[in-house]
Image (cartoon, rainbow, N blue to C red):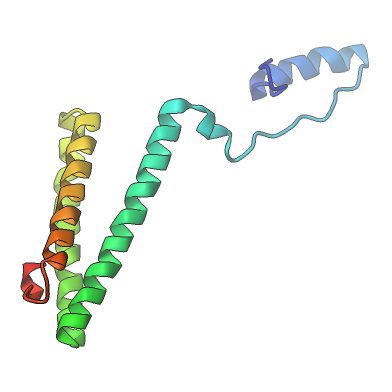
Amino acid sequence: MKKDGYQEPLARVAVEAEITTRGVALPPSKPPSHWSVLRNRNYALLFWGQLISAAGTQMQIVAVSWQVYLLTHSAIALGIIGLLQAIPRLLFSLVGGVLADIIDRRKMLLVIEISMASMSTLLALFTLSGPSMSTWSM
Protein backbone atom coordinates (compact mmCIF):
# COMPACT_ATOMS: atom_id res chain seq x y z
CA MET A 1 0.00 0.00 0.00
CA LYS A 2 1.30 3.46 -0.86
CA LYS A 3 1.47 6.27 1.67
CA ASP A 4 -1.64 8.05 0.32
CA GLY A 5 -3.83 5.00 0.91
CA TYR A 6 -4.10 4.02 -2.76
CA GLN A 7 -3.28 0.43 -3.61
CA GLU A 8 -2.31 -0.94 -6.97
CA PRO A 9 -5.29 -2.72 -8.61
CA LEU A 10 -3.77 -6.22 -8.51
CA ALA A 11 -2.65 -5.82 -4.89
CA ARG A 12 -6.14 -4.59 -4.03
CA VAL A 13 -7.73 -7.70 -5.59
CA ALA A 14 -5.44 -9.95 -3.56
CA VAL A 15 -6.22 -8.08 -0.35
CA GLU A 16 -9.97 -8.14 -1.14
CA ALA A 17 -9.87 -11.89 -1.71
CA GLU A 18 -8.08 -12.45 1.57
CA ILE A 19 -10.27 -10.10 3.60
CA THR A 20 -13.62 -11.15 2.14
CA THR A 21 -12.87 -14.78 2.98
CA ARG A 22 -12.59 -13.70 6.61
CA GLY A 23 -15.87 -11.76 6.38
CA VAL A 24 -14.38 -8.34 7.03
CA ALA A 25 -15.75 -5.48 4.94
CA LEU A 26 -13.28 -3.33 3.03
CA PRO A 27 -13.44 0.45 2.95
CA PRO A 28 -14.40 1.77 -0.49
CA SER A 29 -11.36 2.13 -2.74
CA LYS A 30 -10.41 5.60 -3.89
CA PRO A 31 -9.78 5.84 -7.64
CA PRO A 32 -6.66 7.70 -8.71
CA SER A 33 -7.03 11.35 -9.65
CA HIS A 34 -6.57 12.49 -13.22
CA TRP A 35 -3.71 14.66 -12.00
CA SER A 36 -1.92 11.87 -10.11
CA VAL A 37 0.27 11.27 -13.16
CA LEU A 38 1.93 14.63 -12.47
CA ARG A 39 3.49 13.19 -9.32
CA ASN A 40 6.16 11.75 -11.60
CA ARG A 41 8.73 14.57 -11.78
CA ASN A 42 9.97 13.85 -15.30
CA TYR A 43 6.47 13.61 -16.71
CA ALA A 44 5.42 16.79 -14.91
CA LEU A 45 8.39 18.68 -16.37
CA LEU A 46 7.55 17.40 -19.85
CA PHE A 47 3.84 18.17 -19.47
CA TRP A 48 4.26 21.74 -18.22
CA GLY A 49 7.10 22.46 -20.65
CA GLN A 50 5.05 21.28 -23.61
CA LEU A 51 2.01 23.19 -22.37
CA ILE A 52 4.00 26.43 -22.21
CA SER A 53 5.64 25.73 -25.57
CA ALA A 54 2.32 25.00 -27.29
CA ALA A 55 0.78 28.15 -25.82
CA GLY A 56 3.73 30.20 -27.10
CA THR A 57 3.48 28.62 -30.54
CA GLN A 58 -0.23 29.42 -30.76
CA MET A 59 0.41 33.00 -29.65
CA GLN A 60 3.08 33.34 -32.33
CA ILE A 61 0.73 32.02 -35.02
CA VAL A 62 -1.93 34.54 -34.00
CA ALA A 63 0.61 37.37 -33.82
CA VAL A 64 2.06 36.63 -37.26
CA SER A 65 -1.40 36.34 -38.80
CA TRP A 66 -2.49 39.58 -37.18
CA GLN A 67 0.65 41.38 -38.30
CA VAL A 68 0.29 40.13 -41.88
CA TYR A 69 -3.29 41.33 -41.99
CA LEU A 70 -2.32 44.74 -40.56
CA LEU A 71 0.45 45.12 -43.16
CA THR A 72 -1.51 43.94 -46.20
CA HIS A 73 -5.25 44.09 -45.42
CA SER A 74 -5.46 41.03 -47.67
CA ALA A 75 -7.20 37.78 -46.83
CA ILE A 76 -5.20 36.02 -49.58
CA ALA A 77 -1.88 37.01 -47.98
CA LEU A 78 -3.23 35.79 -44.65
CA GLY A 79 -4.12 32.43 -46.20
CA ILE A 80 -0.73 32.12 -47.87
CA ILE A 81 1.06 32.81 -44.58
CA GLY A 82 -1.12 30.16 -42.89
CA LEU A 83 -0.23 27.66 -45.61
CA LEU A 84 3.46 28.50 -45.38
CA GLN A 85 3.32 27.95 -41.61
CA ALA A 86 1.69 24.52 -42.05
CA ILE A 87 4.02 23.12 -44.73
CA PRO A 88 7.12 22.75 -42.48
CA ARG A 89 5.02 21.02 -39.83
CA LEU A 90 3.78 18.49 -42.36
CA LEU A 91 7.21 17.87 -43.87
CA PHE A 92 9.19 17.76 -40.63
CA SER A 93 6.67 15.59 -38.81
CA LEU A 94 7.36 12.77 -41.25
CA VAL A 95 11.13 13.07 -40.84
CA GLY A 96 10.86 13.83 -37.13
CA GLY A 97 9.42 10.41 -36.31
CA VAL A 98 12.39 8.68 -37.92
CA LEU A 99 14.88 11.03 -36.26
CA ALA A 100 13.25 10.52 -32.87
CA ASP A 101 14.10 6.82 -33.11
CA ILE A 102 17.72 7.52 -34.04
CA ILE A 103 18.70 10.65 -32.07
CA ASP A 104 18.46 11.19 -28.33
CA ARG A 105 14.96 12.61 -27.84
CA ARG A 106 15.95 14.97 -25.06
CA LYS A 107 18.70 16.61 -27.12
CA MET A 108 16.43 16.81 -30.15
CA LEU A 109 13.66 18.42 -28.07
CA LEU A 110 16.10 20.99 -26.67
CA VAL A 111 17.41 21.88 -30.14
CA ILE A 112 13.89 22.26 -31.53
CA GLU A 113 12.66 24.37 -28.62
CA ILE A 114 15.74 26.61 -28.73
CA SER A 115 15.38 27.10 -32.49
CA MET A 116 11.67 27.94 -32.10
CA ALA A 117 12.49 30.47 -29.36
CA SER A 118 15.23 32.08 -31.49
CA MET A 119 12.85 32.37 -34.47
CA SER A 120 10.29 34.04 -32.20
CA THR A 121 12.97 36.44 -30.98
CA LEU A 122 13.97 37.28 -34.55
CA LEU A 123 10.34 37.93 -35.44
CA ALA A 124 10.01 40.25 -32.44
CA LEU A 125 13.17 42.13 -33.45
CA PHE A 126 11.90 42.50 -37.03
CA THR A 127 8.59 43.77 -35.73
CA LEU A 128 10.23 46.30 -33.42
CA SER A 129 12.44 47.53 -36.27
CA GLY A 130 9.50 49.49 -37.64
CA PRO A 131 7.02 49.60 -40.47
CA SER A 132 9.67 49.00 -43.14
CA MET A 133 9.26 45.25 -42.63
CA SER A 134 7.67 43.43 -45.57
CA THR A 135 5.14 40.63 -45.34
CA TRP A 136 7.49 38.05 -46.82
CA SER A 137 10.25 38.68 -44.29
CA MET A 138 8.04 36.83 -41.82
